[in-house]
Image (cartoon, rainbow, N blue to C red; front, side, top):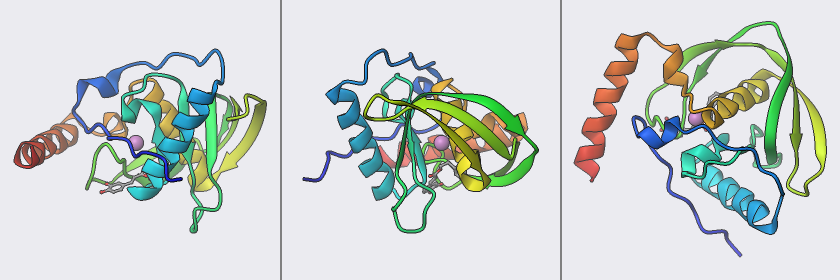
Length: 169
Ligand code: QAP
Ligand code: CO
């Protein structure tokens, strides 16, 4: 059975600025939410999606940086406990469609989280996965990759997206 797809909020929607709350109990509803988010991400297609982007303000993100959808990850209450090095990546975002800009972040991270079965785990990530997890945790804190750009660039993106959103409304 195919999970029901969810609507993705787009910048500059104010709801993307909400700080998500910790998940106290990994219920069946949370596991179902994770499955719907993965389906929504794959359909887009994207490599990462945070609950904030589907207007659910709880600390859950999904990602899969594999070529063939073979490595879905669900991170509940994710926390970066170590970060090392620095890397520049052309980032995009399902909530900022059509725009890609370079962002600098730690290259390697150690993350603690809970999985969809409710079990705590640690994950050492580098490369695209490390960048993706950091980008998605930012969403849970109400932060977008455009916040790392100059105010001029961010304003240009904002105006272009608002115009497209009005045309498509
Ligand atoms: C975050 O982003 C990310 O503009 C995930 O028109 C992206 O899945 C982390 C997408 C890059 C690190 C590097 C973007 C799809 C997907 C678009 C995504 C678009 C269609 C973005
Ligand atoms: Co994003």
